[in-house]
Amino acid sequence: MAAVDLPKNVRISLERASILLLEASEPGVEILLQILAGFGVKSFHPCTTVGAARSVAERTKLDLIVAEIELGDPEVDGLDFVHWLRRSGIDQNALCPVILLSGHTTNGRVQRARDCGADFIVAKPLVPGVLLQRVIWVARDTRQVVETSDYIGPDRRHRNLGPPIGMEGRRATDLTGDIGAALEENMSQDEIDNFLTPTRALR
Image: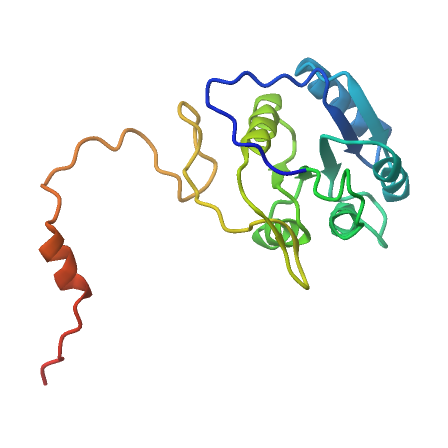
């Protein structure tokens, strides 16, 4: 499913969205159901195993997949499911947007989620407002799909524009507070060019 560039003022309705939920436990599935139902979603496909999720993906048109990474199975996890999905060749779902969930969002885990072809990873415990923002972000995502010998998924290069306006950032590198006006005038083009012009080192 290709990303659609939605105007900022377009209202996103999830009433007709078909969403696959992959969670290892029934209580975990129920929590996801309640959160997404609160967003207006009515069509769910809950699964507790990768096998069940594959079966749904093969026969049902999906608009979004929300999957837990840790499924309690040492042989297969949510990352393996996404890796399979992207290479499955299923016309209606191979490129379906995927949001992964994890209680362990280390740098390595986030990188593996990115490299398997997922669109986003969200830390647990889930905060409904954060999940909704990520769903909307995925719906507005305009990144191109990349297909190479070892990767299929959304372009992994995208700008970090910081947290949404009015939200507190969760990254250590996010700026806090108002940036304010510049204290000095912008550099001229000549000054910028001088920074880029090679010069001979003096000895």
